[in-house]
Image (cartoon, rainbow, N blue to C red; front, side, top):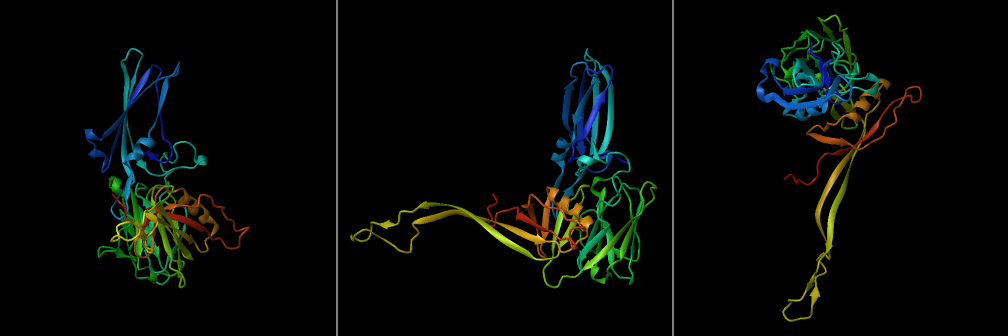
Length: 381
């Protein structure tokens, strides 16, 4: 199992030796399997000299690696990368003391302050199911998507349906994949394995035909690795006849795409920006008559007009444990909204939010504001 670098938190690599005067670190970044590395994958060379009498130097790698984490929704996602570091230690005479090569798997996740330094880099501390909630509230009839960490050895996913629901499901590489005829029946377990390729380190179990499920059906994830306990994900059916539910998709704490349905009222606003100038509307060339002007011409002329829309959405009622999911949405740097037709990029507008507790609130619901991440009039150049 790989040593993990969560690239949204710093990852510090300390290089030490009693004879160390300076050190060089060669950093390579690539996708595919670990054996695909070529010389062009070496992206950075870092050099440091020890300070004073210290016999060590340290390198921070995450910021450099993140340059290669790229997602184009509905196209591709490079959210895991192979990393190689070659560290060369030199003594005060410039001679080589040692050369060490190490490999890592970079994931675009992060840790909290409470998680301490280099979060989840230790073996088996990256969870098998890459989300915090064990209950999934889904929109009746829409796909259910659960992110899974393939390096948790061989994982088996079993669907238990009280009505024996005839649904289809599959483990796929991309969050946005949709049903095709190769998908298996929900009555047959899914086996998730790791073939070593970065494009499937994070996989998604997707259940389609969810209208055939019953509220309370569940999926059990188990691993052949005894370090992982079974995880049971309970499926909570929500049918909202009054409002059109909106699906918020975001990168979560574990570097996986996750979604959360907002079931209640939503409103859209637009903010217009423009420039204007005083327009000279006097007509001097009017067949010899006196100067005049048309009452239908703009004296105050507007130009460079455009607008940016924002959306205010409401979750509906969730249990208190979903405070953590709301927190991760607010901390996410990439968020999208699916409105039933298009998946569009949005940015958080609400910069503060008071978390609710069941001891204070009988029912917990949230209202969140987002700006659409584009101008309304197409001005792409």
